Length: 511
Image (cartoon, rainbow, N blue to C red; front, top):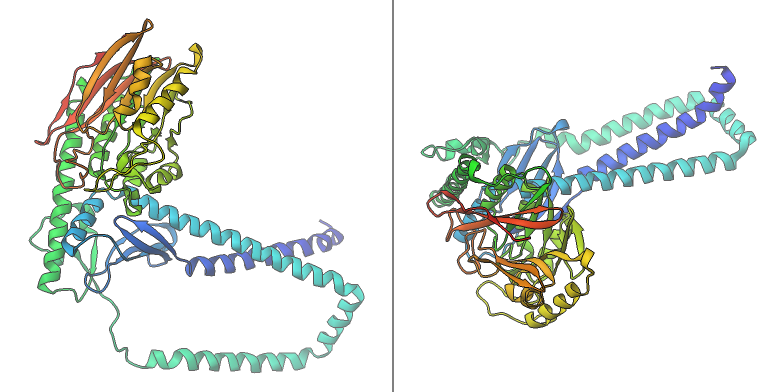
């Protein structure tokens, strides 16, 4: 490269360096001081990045801080300042947290997503700031002109010696100022000693902890009898939950030979419903889907117990355990309020909303439940009644041409597909809500078979509550097999209260 070419490239290289340095500094400082208020588990929480290589949970003044190594590049960690919750008492809160912690993948993924979003936002802000600085510098450089820049250069050069002396004076002054600010703090004895961390195994030496808990550390100084008792109860709940659902998952592998396997040309979907926050069943259901070779998850609603914002952990868990599958979903009457449906959409679910849609070659129609029901509260009407929804969906289904016939209708309450079933405008109609299996029942309408089927509660829920270290009733899920987008068979897989897995017979559907 000639000297002339170097002179032509140098300004652009300088501007690029200026942009990169400014963007890096602004982005790094912004990221280091950023925070976001989100819902984690059963709590509102403030999440902020750190560089200590740990994920730290600050549980407030009563309970200890906990941390676990993140093993991330650059020592990036996170601090989770756990705040308010709707739990009525400390015991209920710790039990709930322990059960969520027994299947933490969904919440871990959510925290990682928040940190990644912070990093991206601050990177964009840094790049924008760098660009602004480059524009300002370029504008000033151009506005001054070559002659004025030369005059300024000569002026600086003539006073170079004086400037050097002044620079030394300024540097010394800066050093004195820094020393005056930070020096005394280093000389004085700290009133409170730095936090020391002890392994959880030292706090609870009588318990045999699993490998994940063995990595947890507790802030030192937390040794009150009542406090240790609360932590011990939470750890015991966590361990009972992981053992029970872990055993169920192992059982799925053992009975895998009885599960209908997808053959060439077939597509298998797994139907779940009425999980009611019981994320313990998610890895069990995911194992069933894996063994069957499923490509699709159908969620018939009631993933939560009351539709509260803190219950989105249930959807986060579902997305994480079925991250390789497409998800078609509706919300149930206990999901009302908008938080659950919003979380479904954020997690990439196809939420049915009365419009026919094709997923994995299967033509779906459905809608979320219009009724609103809280935990232990009576139903309250929504925008329409179940009967109105049933008629409206039937009208939509019956308007479809023969080559666009609805293969599968998904609703939460079976009453919502009653009119469509009577008029014979869909091949397979699926629901949940009843917490017990009904069907499959097939009838012929206008020489076409129409099958209705209601799945039991996947979460093993009694009433609207299922979060726990064991099942309250058998947890049911159903495999639906399709060929060319048409349903050809059903098979139930049930998690029993004993910890066993029962595989029902494969039931072919008439074509």
